[in-house]
Length: 310
Image (tube, rainbow, N blue to C red; front, side, top):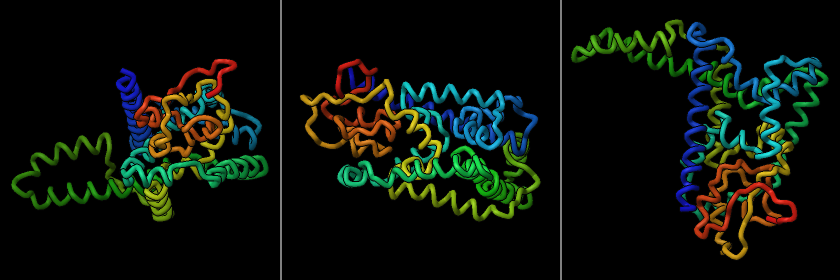
C-alpha cells in the first residue's frame, strides 16, 4: 500500500511537471506569435511567480510590480516544503527531468555520480553575483533566470528551427502533392498557422548562440542528473537558501535502512537522501524518487515534529 501511494505521488509530480511545461510553451507561443489568443494577465504568470525576478527588480529599481508579489507565495511555500518549486512547477526543470531520465539506467553508475558534490555550491555563487550586479548595474537574471533562459532559447533558436522545418514540409507537400495528400495537409496547415506556426519566418542575430547554449545545457543532463538545477540555476540557489530548513522533511528509519544507496541513485538533485546529517534539504527537489526507489520503505517525508531527528 505504501509503495502504491508513493508511485501515485511520483506520477502526480510528473503530471504536474508536464502540465506546467505545456502551459509555459502555450503562453510563450501566444505571447510571441499569436498574442490575440490568450488573456493578457496570463502571459507573465511564471515570471510573476519567480522570486529571483522580484528580488533583482527591487535591487535595481527599488520598486516591484504588484503582480510580482505572487512570488511571495513561492517563497512562503518554500519555507515549508523546501525546493518544491524546482521539482514540481518549473518548466525548465521539467525538461531537465525528462532528459535526465534518458541517462544510463544502471544503478551502480548512478550511485557513483548521484551524490552531493561541493561544486553544487556554484549556483549560490552565481546567485550572489546576479544580486550584486542587479544592485549596481545590469540585470543578469534576464540571462540566467531559468524562465528567461528558456524563453530566449525558444524564441531565438528552437521555435524558428521548428517553424522552418514545418513550413518546408508543408510547402513541399503543397507543390508536389504526393499521393494527393495536399488536400489533407492544407487544412492541417491552416489550423497550425492559426495556433502554432507563423508564415513570417523569425530570424535573430544571436539565435545560433542561444541554440548552442540551450543544446549544451540539455546535453549536460547526460553527464550529471539535472546539471543546470544542481550547478547553475540562480533561482534554485535562492530557493535553496530559503528552503534550507523546511518544515516538511525527509526521515529515514534506521531499523529498515540496509544502506543499499538506491536513494542516492534515484536522487536527481544530489541531496544525499540517506538520512542523518548527510541529507541536504537545500538540494532536495522533493520529487519522492528516493522514497519510490527504497526497497525497504525506510524513507518517508513528514512534517517535522519538535524533538524528533531524521
